[in-house]
Length: 400
Ligand code: NAD
Ligand code: MG
Image (cartoon, rainbow, N blue to C red; front, side, top):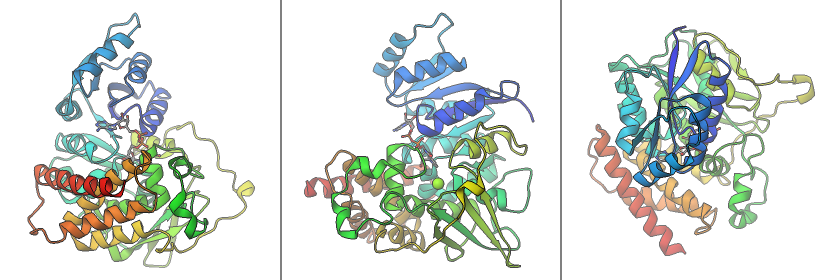
């Protein structure tokens, strides 16, 4: 394996912190070149100090001042770059070999795309990039010889269960012999709650995931199962798989991270602790296996694995996601953008949990009449994303 110089975009988040943990275990194979943060600037300074990062990226000039104030270390201060363009420029920096795309939301799309365009090894945690611009993203990976490794645990599991490859590229047809992809989902904290209780649940309840510790946005998405919907769209693009051949299976223990079903009736599964350091280490080490720091999975202590069908009445966001994927790319962009607004409003106690699906459904309805213009450039995607955010914000304001 050649030595990797890693740019961690979104380093202060849950995936970012786990990535730095794995990198710190392998100083002979990899080091941190750049880090980025949006709000936790003091934490960014600590991370830069601990890793010896050469570059940090912050969103504004005032964040730059905060970083300088927070820098008490005796060692030289890293170069500070400012603004959105700096994220994309650093992802494409010639000094970088590997980019961990771990910014949350569509905000992570331009920098992830820049990494693909620059032909980097892209470790993609930011699923929203594929939901909003899957076709464009995969084409960019192919055209520029980038290496794409899925970090989302389900997609990483599927990647591990597909026929072996030692170079991760973007396929244009489903892998030979594969019948279906089986995406597992925990069902989140409200899998068994009485349906009439759901409208009263709080953000803290929604963020208390039974098995995974994650950022707040993806935790809410897991509770509504919109996360699984985004993952169906992500799987469609990553593995060139038609939606009719992707099945969602509820698996409350979150030990089987996903499965691939083959034509001969075999199902291959990847199992492990629900700890994101496993897929992160897989992506960093690929095609080798490296230590992730994750403990053993004690199968005998676990005892049993359960699987069940998702209930679409309980999880309307999952139904909306399947519909969006079957409808158009524009619908997928709108699904994601409306959800980001809805989740943000829910986390601020401005709308109810059960209204998240209403915001998405309303936004999808409103863009349905739009002319089906091609969304083949980043600017087109970002324009529709911004338009949907305005619609969804208005809807949420009316509900308050
Ligand atoms: P998080 O909220 O913990 O962290 C998000 C990171 O993005 C932070 O570093 C933050 O500073 C940065 N950020 C936020 N808004 C930004 C903006 N507008 N511009 C630039 N940077 C911004 O999120 P997370 O849980 O680490 O998730 C990150 C991504 O990984 C998401 O796309 C999520 O869906 C995906 N993912 C996460 C997990 C998980 O276990 N946490 C699992 C699978 C996939
Ligand atoms: Mg996942």
